Image 1 (spheres, rainbow, N blue to C red):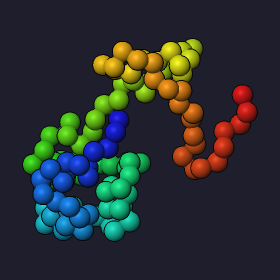
Image 2: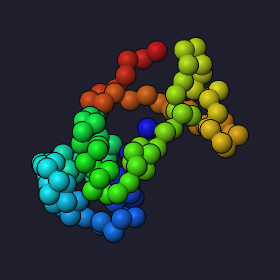
Image 3: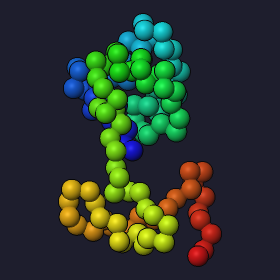
Length: 109
């Protein structure tokens, strides 16, 4: 999934994270500056479904506007990275190198 909050907010005329943060607080969702920064500029690690509801209400959007499926990134057991085909493009996707979330390198294969 690709997180699309910033573009969705911009389409609704919200250009700053602080503005969205204030609007969310007015609807009962108080988010710390750090978490708001992560939501605005990156991919959230976790997000409550109730929070998604509030974000959708504030932005007047659907969940599909915020979360864009990327099925081409899903591999099956035994499938090589280069065998995956990007959905709708008809071309082979480039190899994806897995990375750990904590920034450490993976062990050699």
